[in-house]
Length: 115
Image 1 (cartoon, rainbow, N blue to C red):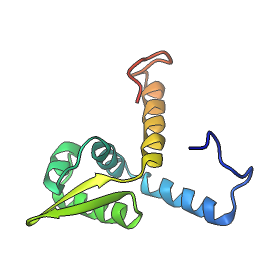
Image 2: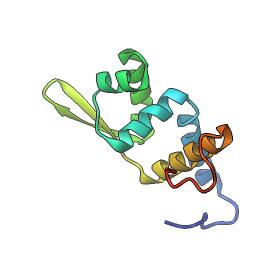
Image 3: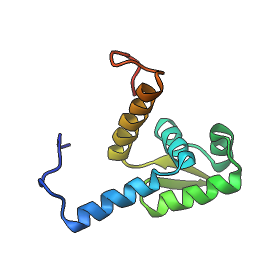
């Protein structure tokens, strides 16, 4: 891991990939799905219950996240189980969620329970 990008100004390809990742994270339901999948592997129905969405909506979000390479799936019989697959995105989400908690006052700068 680099503490900062390798190049002082990103080239077009890297800027496009970064923007695409942010687009995938620009939906609150997808953020909740991804954060859950960083903790545990889950089926569509479990995710739907956990994030408070319908299974159909979760399924659509998972399809987008899978196409973007942010989640992987495996089949077990007739069930599909999903897991988050990118540790860089986990760190990005952790920082963003920590920031959100600080903005709302749910956490303080010295809170030991940050993500």
